Image 1: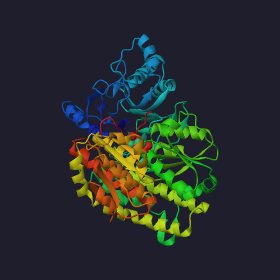
Image 2: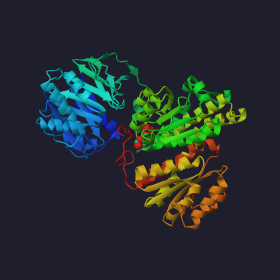
Image 3: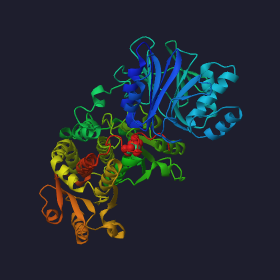
Image 4: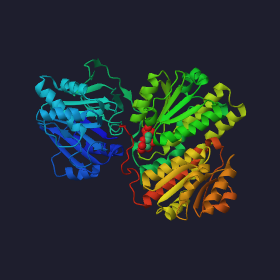
Length: 613
Ligand code: G6P
């Protein structure tokens, strides 16, 4: 959710913080703020975008070499200047930025109020910095001890950075449940701290991922990592593979459009080194490592949120279809609280782009506590989910910045397809010829996606005609059903048009009542076993004067007679169809949102990485 960036070292800090916040803005964008420690602690903060903060800060002295910045996604307290981070302590001795939720803030606040503390904001965060100061002033303890003791009292999730007025060479950070990455700079004594590597990558490739319950203290150029319980840890330095160009728009108007267009490459990247159709080779190292578990699994449970949950639905169809293992797909947020039945021989597959989604992490912990094997499918290397799982496979889609997920979805589905094929092969539930045919088809997907991208002009035209619609219905059957859900989600997220995805045949049990001449209905109607049934569903819509936008297989004549608009996508095995049929839906949503003047990359109220439940 919120984004954190901080710096200590020989460089001027303000440009690093502003640029870092711009890179992190996809995590939260309702307000932003900066604290700089240069003689004394100065805080600048503003409701709105990072650009508003930058404009505001122009009138002030922002010199200094130690500082921190924050971009907020509000949880406690509305998004205004007062609630923006950083927050000062009571006497202004400390400042804090925080990502997460302090669940017991109300009781701590009540206690501190009794002791004379006055609060300037409605946030849970401010309570924590007051508590640190209270312990520091009354407990006769050192700076890092005060932070550790305060953290010992809070319940909840946090990634924090603390600056202290009377410690001009110190920066403290800590995490529990929300990520913190420490970049080891190239200059002596230079460190960067951030919620993810995006603001760090242009300065250094060497990073340390703080673990839950750890506190990093940089003091006079030296980093010490301890647990909250004061146990010293030896940090491990990882090398980042991310490249700076991946974080730039590269000539596209929006990150989302860039990421849609990257799909031929990102799909290929998720297969790279793992598949060679000519040699009949397919191997995901992570799956091979758990071969016995997969071969003997009685059940697979998939968990995820949002788009990742939709990828999970595709995987349910794939794994049951090809590998014949029963699959259940659950929203992580439901799974974690509903006392699910989990067996020790279950394999639980959490799917996540960011690797930080709080509900997915909590669901993993629950499944782990019951003895299940946890096999993650994640995009962000080194994030919390891959570190919490027993094994897994990265999707390698590269950084996804647009809040609405596009290339991460197709990379997830690609990896899940490979997992299904590998297990099917191991279990002997797929014939040789079908296996080789699907490997060949999988390798041809990037070229087919490339072809779909050439339909952009047609999608602009359809978007133009439907941009003012108030509702959309998306219908699909079989593999087309999760695609319909994903298409509807894309439209809702970025254009704020109400949209529902439905299994085409279920339409007559409810949504058909909504259909009139005002209602665009997007139907996934590619050639497959249920094609004729979908054609009947289209007829049902037409009979009620609905407008049909159909995604059909190239050369289709039947639907063309019925539909108002037909988008012809290349022929492809039904099993792989989600990978190409979702692309026109991404483009349609994108263009409608742009035409409606919406902020495509940072849609209102949403955040890229949802680190609170
Ligand atoms: C947020 C994002 C979605 C994403 C979902 C799950 O809602 O806006 O794009 O699908 O979280 O995130 P994850 O990182 O776990 O895939």
